[in-house]
Length: 196
Image 1 (tube, helix red, strand yellow):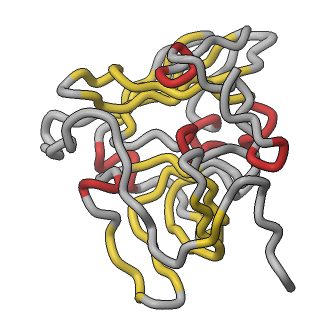
Image 2: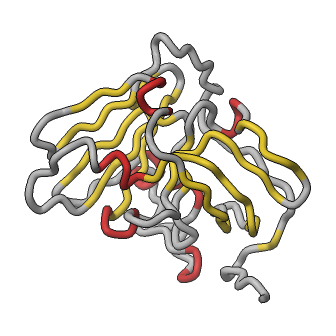
C-alpha cells in the first residue's frame, strides 16, 4: 500500500535530528515523571516506576514541520493511556501539555495536544526503536533518551516532546513552546497546519 505523503513534505529513510537547546544528560537518580494539573491527586514516578508500566509496540509515520517524513518506524514504549490509569482526572479535562527538559529546566519545553486524540496505541512515550535498516536499539540522547513522546501521525513531530518530564492535564487548550512562537495549535500535517 502506498503511503500518503502530506502536502509540502518529502520522504526520507533516515531519522533527522532537530532539537531546541542542549542535549539532556540523563541521571536516573534525579529524573522523575510528574502527572499534574487538573487531577484529583498529583503523582510523581521514578524512572524505575515508569519502566515497570505495560509496554506497547507501534509502527509510526513521522512528519516534521521542516518538511521531511519518515514512514514505518517501530517504537516500543508506554502508551499515554497507561499513565491515565494512575490518576483520577477532574471533570472537563480536554487537553494536555507534555513537558520536557530544555537547557536544564525540567519544564522548559512543552507541547499542547487534545487528550481525546491520544488514547490509542499511537501515542507513546518511547525508549527504543527500529526500522527496516536496523534492529531494536535505544533512542539516542539526541533523539530524546531516556523517554520521548511520539504523537500520532495526525500531528507534526514538534508535538513529540524529547526528554519528557511530565504531563499536565488541562481544561482548555494552551500554547506550548513552539505555539507561543507562532506555530499552529493543531499541527495537522495533512492540512499543512504549520503556522498560525
